[in-house]
Length: 260
Image (cartoon, rainbow, N blue to C red):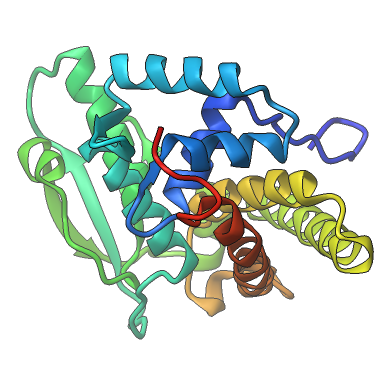
């Protein structure tokens, strides 16, 4: 959100168009012509898409095999995170918190960065340097980097847990942007339904919604502000994704986009 309250969306480049398409496709492998046709939705030239594909292969983002482009292992992990953000696995909360405290003496910059990425994926927040925590209401495997650098504990705060949650996460800010994205998504969906235009806009807003869902702390209801928009935003995204999938299927079908 800008300072004036308007919603700012990240424009989709040729690279982000390719990535968004493959990340939303299962399995995430498509022929070049299919990706070129998706680029046409955004008035992106075929040559621009092909250059982006070549650069992404060189950077290790994609692999090319038998005329098909697919995600590499690192981005397959990102796809799994995105899928999980749409339907996070939760469990009944008993009031306990999971805590991870850094206990190794020395860490290289790369190790610190890897831990921060892991904590973001696990939806833990940093209370102070080297101390991470969250309510123990999520069901997901721990990551090796956390085991290597941290000692894990279980506990509960002395004070109000809702106040602690509000300290760890900007819940009001997250909710404001989520509501703006939900409204924007409904507007572009209505436009597409009425005159079959605006598909690029729907694609762009949907990508922004997915990025927002990746940052949802997925807290227990007791710790959330009233009228939390997380579930509504997920429902809106799922409906939009189904609509986009029907459109994109025509673009990525064998008849519409064969290997080249």
